[in-house]
Image: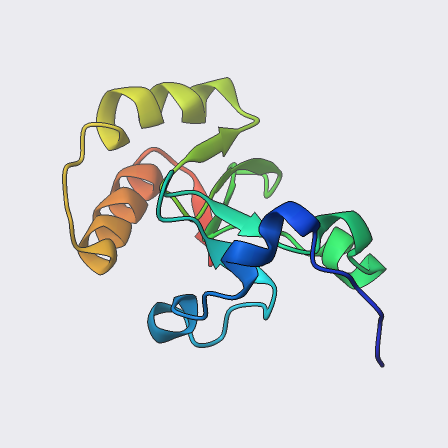
Length: 122
């Protein structure tokens, strides 16, 4: 299935940079990292098709003990919390992790969150 999308005019400079595929070869073809602010962006956000709107853009999905969504860890190691207990754990134990290696950081974060009774999906 094909969908017509347009790169947002203010995102052309990001879209033209293909270096994200070195680090993340399976990334969405419209997903880019801005080196100026370190954040990740959808370069076709205004015209994205339904499948994109339904896609959960996160590195990790965190569920509470009942299987309900408690939060999402975004690409930049940012937590979007929906559960106040998860947010407290993040603020006291995860935010203080100063690990430059993403794989090591991911493992440490997952261990902390799991010990607190949450489930993680990646």
